[in-house]
Length: 400
Ligand code: PHB
Image 1 (cartoon, rainbow, N blue to C red):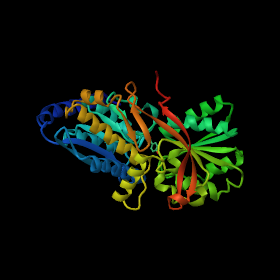
Image 2: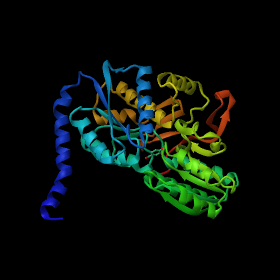
Image 3: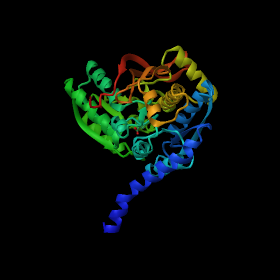
């Protein structure tokens, strides 16, 4: 790098901060009598568009049910398509902050998108509500981040415990090769090994357009009791189809998975190949509570033919966090005031009880062990049926 490049590389973040801070300090503060604006960054096109659609539907359902006014002001959602691309997310976040003068950033369908935008939340002191991404360390990327989704370590530790309690001894791990996959591998392996199990091999597949075939052949050759796996929402269908096609069930190998693998959006399309898969997660559309039954019915009325998955509930609860915070501050949109109002919030969600940890700004909720079953009482469809509950789980990944 020559001197000029070095200087511009050093100056660029400062200039961005300068532009963001000063353009916000000016006109945005003068608009306080106008709408409260929430910028929603979502992957609405590309391979993760199903995630974006679920998130948008969840956020819109919350406003449709609870009204779009708080502290006497209208709430406006400004939705942008980040195409699951960090550079696009960065550019759109800047546009949302500078041009649209949003008071809150929200969405973040994948971990790299959240990491790309976090420095801007810090520079502009703008609350950033992570409704989907699940890598543990995301909340440490900015003091303005609050998470309404879940963390991967939160769900894979209970799964490792369940596996050991159910006489699973040898496991091969297969994860998408990016941050939440690496979190899954690391935390599952540590816990499973602590409990006396063995992870005989750890495999990582590319995040985009994965071909599982060569990896599954390797799993078959290694003959574990089970395959432990994480792939992000929407990708599990290909994995499970190839797992079956390659005859792994007949070879006596079962699947245990982080719950994104059998997400509600795709589960029913899998057919009987998915029966018996055990997962751990924080949300199932079959969660048996009056709050969830009402939520699922309202979602299906709003989006006919769709089933809400954990992404939708992350956005629905994220909107609750934002609206409750605005109610508590009586419409004061300062980042400090909103963060203070969000910390410690607790409420009854379709997933069960939820609390925002005031120390880590991460979500505390129940984790459920679930098994895929075909349910006559639920329209003869496939569902993740809860078989055990681990209450009020904090993210185990945080330094304390
Ligand atoms: C993530 O990128 O953090 C992520 C995305 C989808 C999931 C889980 C984690 O299902």
